[in-house]
Length: 201
Ligand SMILES: Cc1cc2nc3c(=O)[nH]c(=O)nc-3n(C[C@H](O)[C@H](O)[C@H](O)COP(=O)(O)O)c2cc1C
Image 1 (cartoon, protein in one colour):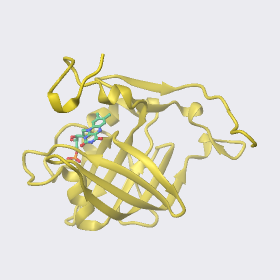
Image 2 (cartoon, rainbow, N blue to C red):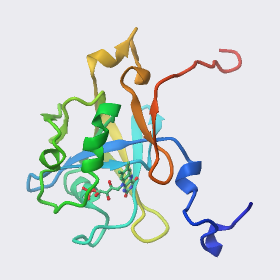
Image 3 (cartoon, rainbow, N blue to C red):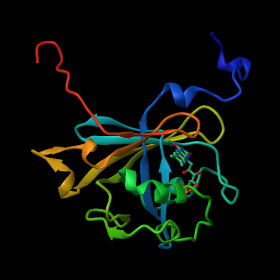
């Protein structure tokens, strides 16, 4: 089949995120200017540069008590920092719990029963037991086409790696079962990897 998204829905459920899959989940921790810790998953997420290292996520839609974006974006615009925590299989229920819409003043670490630790380079909490966490300083906020579609680029200024996730000097996602998002309500857990070298490598 072929369809043009501009012509309206072609299938009962939009297949876009099933096509662009799997996507790792940025479990983003932020802090409001008045000190409330926030935690929420965002799967419109990827790395976009090595030097300096930069990551991008996008917020879509809104929140009933906000004029623009969600609490994560609002906090980042207030403080200029955020932390991206990696989700492992064991963290799934907590990640999912943190996706609920909470009032901006709720400590979402407490609400999702997640232990927090202080970031090293930025004034923000991180997920203490995450396999990895990227401390980021805000680089750019980009308004995208469509209402409530906003991309955020951050520069990574600190990297936490859990020691047991390092195998022979490499961060091994099969070790802990990296969680990634597919389309619809589907997820996958990375349990195996294979190596493929580029021509000439
Ligand atoms: C696995 C997963 C991935 C999600 N990805 C996104 C995303 O990429 N962009 C987005 O705006 N919301 C996404 N959401 C929904 C947000 O997590 C949800 O709206 C949350 O309440 C936002 O919290 P906040 O207001 O504290 O930022 C996702 C939810 C789940 C469970």
